[in-house]
Amino acid sequence: MFDPFSSKEPLLRAQARLETVQRSVIREMARYGQRFTVDGSVLRGPGTTAVAVREHPGEDGAVGHVDLGFVLRLGQADGPVIWDCTAGRGRTEEEKLDSAVRMWATTTAAAVVEMQERRGEHGDHVRPGELPGWHAVQGPAAVFGFGSDRLAEWLAGNQLLPALADALRPGLPSTGVTGVKVFLGGRAGEEVAEVRVDGTVSEPASAALRALGWPRGERLCWARLFVLLVPDGQEAQAVPAGSAPAPGAAHGGPGVLRRGLLARWRQARPGR
Image (cartoon, rainbow, N blue to C red):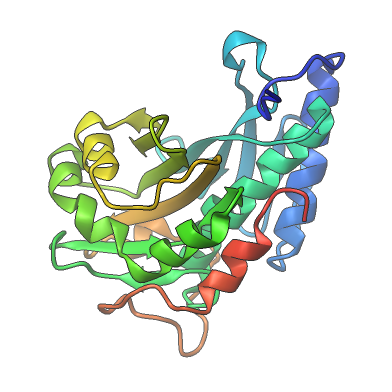
């Protein structure tokens, strides 16, 4: 069976991989109206933002993995950096890296941009009752694979964050912005359910995710989404210097995923 995360193609050199990722990040962030430029191994963005790129060797020779860190306050030693490991699909390493960045941009970067702009355009602001004292910004999910409509429809009708709240709460830090990545899918009998908090697997939250009733089928299908959690009263610290709320910006009141985001999920499939 063809493994979308492995390749027998000749591997790119480290510099070529970096340049491929940087080009992809610049292109994807431009779609959010943000201009990023290359500065060594870092991409500088508006204000104090930047994106750092870190090598991520794949398991069993897999390629197309990369670590991307969204820096909110460049030059501040203890400034928040939202790290995320992402992987892509394709027949060459360059295609896989490009796909990985597109997946990251659709989910993780969208949540960060929404936290900056607070327009309600690139994600949803939620204060779940199950996580009192926290402001959540959730970006769209990327759903891909065979028969992805069923999984996308399930995600549109179910709120994952409240369902995972009890398992997440004990491991959340008391200060700063926290990134929560959710990855689920596979097929019946070979499910993958993983929740990472600031890049580290949360076993309780992953078990809670596995126990949910998302559709399992006979063919491979996955979903990936990213949530930013900020303690109440610390929202300003989590926004990059030089950013300001847009007029009429969202204030993080109670809410659910808008059905309009489903269109973005479908557009996020690799290869588009």
